Image (cartoon, rainbow, N blue to C red; front, side, top):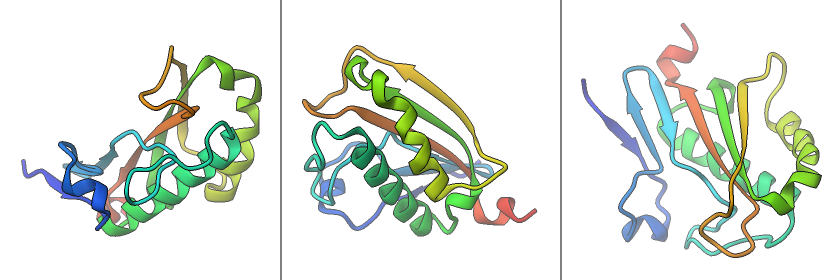
Amino acid sequence: MTRRVANPDWPRFDRATFSAAVRMEGTWILSGIGSTDAHGELLHPEDLVKQTRQIYVNASEILRIAGTSMESVVKTVDFIVPEAVEHYALTRQVRREFFSSPFPAATGVVVHSLLRKGMLIEIEFWALAGDEATA
């Protein structure tokens, strides 16, 4: 079994001890993604919808580098903080911007907090590799 990785050419990965995405067999598993720029700086503090959209933009770029796309996503896991629960339903509009029916499987988990102050949501993506997505 060969493990492959996909990391964008973002400065933050020069110091990271994790990969943006790892492929085992026919599946890409993306690390939890927050609403950050290429340097790892938080974007859109305290705005759940804008954070979610930025996360999906970041995931799209990582998947592009991996040789696949958002169309190959089969599962997402959303980790949200308690103060975001009230507005969590608004993230559906972002999912509809990036996914179409049939939608990927999804799990939402409320967590005590995330690593950065102002971060309301972090999302993991699971996607089929490009050659598997078309099979």
